[in-house]
Structure formats: C-alpha cells, structure tokens
Image 1 (tube, rainbow, N blue to C red):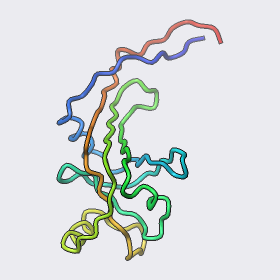
Image 2 (image 1 turned 30 degrees about the vertical axis):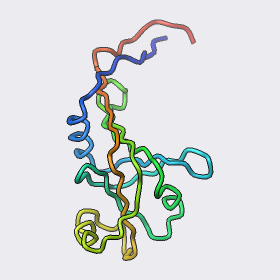
Image 3 (image 1 turned 45 degrees about the horizontal axis):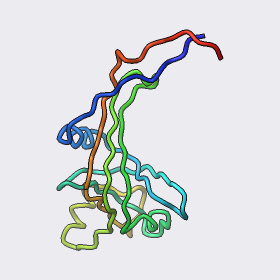
Image 4 (image 1 turned 60 degrees about the vertical axis):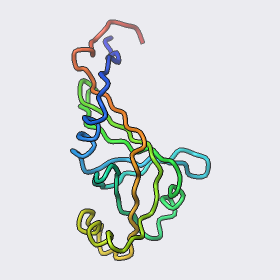
Length: 145
C-alpha cells in the first residue's frame, strides 16, 4: 500500500505572506469560545496592516473573540496536499465603531443578505507567518497498514 508522506515546506517572508493574504477572499478566524478552540470562516479584506471583516450584530460567537488575541488563517492548497501555501496572522480583534470609516468598510465588505446592523472587526497584524508546500517533497513510500 502506498501512502503520501508529508514533505518539506519553505518559509515565506512577511511581505510575501501579506501579499498572499490579500489574494484570497475567505479566511478563518481562530479564537477561544468557552475555553475551547473555535474556527469561523469570514469574507475579509486586508488594509493598513490589518485584516477587516464584517459580522452580524447579534453573533455571540464573534462577540467572545472581540478584544482578545486571535489567529487568522488563509491558504490555497491542492486537494492532494501536493502543493500550495498557507499563511497565519496573529493579532488582537477589536470592533470598529468610528463612523467616519464605516461607510468605506460597508463598500469593501458587502453584507450577506439584508443585514443592516452589522459590526466591523479589525485584526491588527502583530505577527504573520507562512509556508509554501514544496511539491517535490511529497513522495509515495511502501508501507503496511
């Protein structure tokens, strides 16, 4: 029986990580909910060294993530794990209430459905890391199950 063996990755520099971060439109916010890990997909934009996204006003899941340190992850990986990349940001999530920027955020982050009372969240990028999966590092080996 053959099986794929995890291969090597190449570390990406921060500038490349930020460029890749902005190249996709959906990412995952990783936070703690009642002392357990929680992950939530969101549409987002990258602007001013931050990740910005929109959430429903009554979403208590995200309310638990506000004013805490969270992770934000994006990737583009082939289904066979034979190539691609992944980027992770760590930073503090805070709600944006500045009425002077909300109209611009409403354009950058269109609402899902007819929601009009959404909240806007910013994750300041305090650290960013990423890796490219090296396709040549994936190989098949013989083994027993």
